Image (cartoon, rainbow, N blue to C red; front, side, top):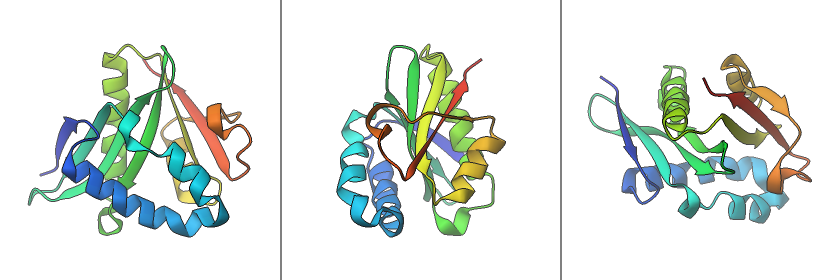
Length: 151
């Protein structure tokens, strides 16, 4: 049985999963690694989720960083490769949206890399719409940004 834990970025399991995510993303960043690394600092993530499998092993994570009074930025979405395709990313994203709604955010925004077509497809499938790049990503040619109104 999958369990969901709401926590923050100080959670050790969240930190370990983010470390694995960073290794995974290193393949995509190439010469842009230092630019993205500074944007992926987890210290500003006040709300984090860790998903555990039936053996209480942490298998996925995601977080929310306040972008503005009305916008929650989804950050550090990751599922261990051996657990992909089992709906865990959808569980994480749904829980982050629910939490964002409880925190009175009006929408979720996020950024992913253009090369990660599976991520782009995932967000589109979950009703996220492509928007112009925002914030620090405005001039990031390798980034694509999304938003979704919360209900």
